[in-house]
Image (cartoon, rainbow over the protein chains, first blue to last red):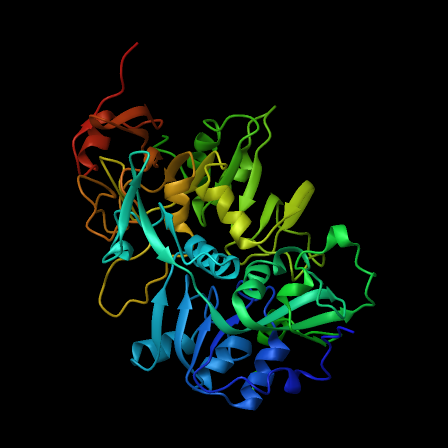
Length: 236
Length: 216
């Protein structure tokens, strides 16, 4: 019988090796899987490539993972914000790599990987420096830029409800990149606010079908990044 | 004596050009003010890139939901009839031509409709593009709201952008503190002057040839 439940965030992330590519769900603070990220800090894997829309805020969550020296390269669309300081300092010091990807292209590259489509053409970046060196082709008289799929070894995801077969629902705009990342990673690790019985989520309401999920761990009162930052917390 | 439009008047003027029932994406800054000036009898449906169609105003004090944000990472509300979706669906709405109007701020806009609003290209600056390049290529009409000149008096309406482009030839109309300006095959053309502003003043502060409003 399928049961993807794991006992703790520590055991959920225990096998992430040095050098892994890790997708992290969330857009800014909303949907950020803080407990899984902190477990990865405790676990200590290094030389990671991390895919997220941003680079974290304050000194908790993704920013703390970067600040702990575990990330070699970030792939994101918007690497700075009013509350991000860890990444900008490392970047200016030349101690972390950046691959800048427009937000819609980032989403579609992740989706394409999950969908088994190795590349696609998009109008985004046509005529800009972000298209330099990329293949372009005309369709119906308009130029488009080829973009490759973006895969990962692991995805760290926060959801609202999950069942033992891995069906997921999310809360409002905390959904963002997470359903795409669940599809694109070899191993998808999910923290859920509530683990419910199979059948408790109406099949019509499932957002991520369980086939895209490998491990589910219940974190019943997840902390929100904004709350930690308001309290000036840091991790570890 | 009135001299030009302030930020709110610029936003109100732009709102007048958005048809009833439009799906609208508003950039950060002055464009956000457009939502305060929906003309009587019209309804706009606001899209925000991080997965919400039907975005409402900021929440009342004490009623914010930490999982309900806009693309500028500010807390918002959802109106009746709103929907949530993931990022690939959100950018399908943008890239697929389903959003009618996008109102953006800018650093520079050129006479051929080129826009540069994501990077100065300065060495050492951290590049950050977000969804700007997707929006300018995918949304049906791109409107720009901007001061006519920079804080140091340099023109923002220019012959050619000197900053790295966000997209080429995409802007159709510009709302500044001095005028409403169209991008036409013949270059910039004034549509309307702000109160107390003369065409000669606009021409002087524009970094490219500009045509007066068509008469009649």
